[in-house]
Image (cartoon, rainbow, N blue to C red; front, side, top):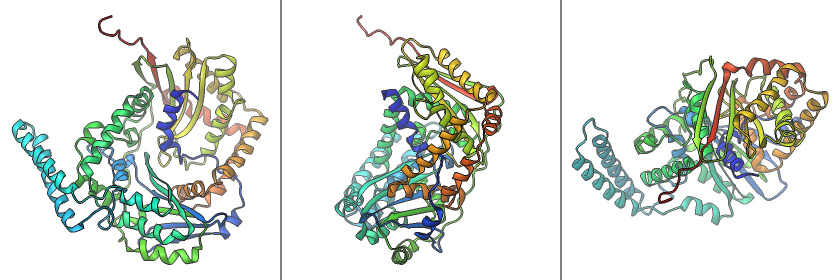
Amino acid sequence: MSKLRHSLLRLLLPALLLAAGPAAAQDLASFEAKTRVHKLKNGWTFILVERPTAPVFSFFTLVDVGSAQEVPGITGLAHMFEHMAFKGTERIGTTDAAAEKKEIAELEAAYQAYQAERLAPRPDPQKVEALLAAFKKEQEEAARYVVKNEFGDIIEREGGVGLNAFTAADQTGYHYSLPANKLELFAYLESERFLDPVFREFYTERDVVQEERRLAMDQPIQRLVEQFLATAYHAHTYGIPTIGHMSDLQSFTLTDAERFYRTYYAPQNMITAVVGHLDAEALVPLLEKYFGRIPPGPAAPPLRTVEPPQIAEKRVALVDPSQPFYLEGYHKPASTHPDQAVYDAIDDVLSNGRTSRLYRALVRDKRLAVFAASFSGFPGDKYPNLWAVYAVPARGVTNAQVEAAVRAEIERLKSEDVTDDELAKFKTRAKADLLRRLGSNQGLAIQLASYQRLYGDWRELFRSIERLDKVTKADIRRVANEVFKGVNRTVAVIETVAPPPEEGR
């Protein structure tokens, strides 16, 4: 696999991890028999699946918030809070909670004073420098109480593996696995980090996120995709980069983060799926004991802005000495729309394996590209999103040649029926895909929480196979003609130029 493809997949992975895909047949009745949904009085929903194949369990907590909930000035804050969720609480990660709390308050007051002067219409440079020095001193004082990485160290010490999290356009996820005899530890730690998070090392961690952005923007494909989304979305917040704009990463405050947390990390905005060697009847009292401590919060405000219909093709070109790259996308409904199954079929026909149309036409036969694929649900799945196709041109091939070949395959979908064999293979592979994706405890937990969030019922994970089975050739032609129109298209390319000559040559 090329480095360019690796780069794109790393960029798209958070958005695509839970993107709607074909969920296929397993026996729903057998899953219902070993699955229990328990909703606490504070609104937190738990899906518990007894799967005693090994003495371990995995969990996935999905928070219904991402960069789509951000506004100018705080972009990147959803991702920033993901980092903060590993910093501990008043009981984890500190040598003296009371003293640290006082120091953090003084630290934030010092930063707010510095920020006010720095962002003033006519800042006094000397005053800015003095206030920054005072803030730095407060940082050093607060740092004296920090026990670094204690939250993660506890999990590792108790046999936990896979501790991680991600932030995407419309969701944030937290997960790891533990031995089966550590269920109470899980209930304590996971409730604790959301009951009583301490935003310690906030500004130090903000610097880390700024460096993440710098490193990301060193990658040409990352820069291109950011411009692609900003071009495709001129109203909806799906156009905001999940990592945030650099000026916001340099300006949002601990106070902003606390406000964001109180708004979106209310229990009724959170779903946790726990899968593995567990007794649901015995686990429920632990959930009540620990997660029930968290008070309910106000309902998170819904998004108001809707992306208006696109009325003209949009194009963006990144001139760079890197390899050429081609990407085009079309606006489509949210992944909960009944036609999502049709997009799944289109992606399978175009991209699934060496018999797919894009591989045969662009890679094998015409040798125009070294890789080509399509996907949907980008950058998120909760709101109307994008269906997209991308290709890495072969050596000596232009983006224009790739564009013509891609467009020819899209036009075939609009003017010709797919074959009986293509449709049958899609449905067979879709069912096999579910078995693979649900094979691990973690994979099952992710899927259950995702479908519970999108549909309000985890059972839709299994019922969706009925929608896949109902996809027809006519559906594919209908959707292709409705959506794959020039006025609904956004194109982004990397145009390769020779690097500037080195000095002295």
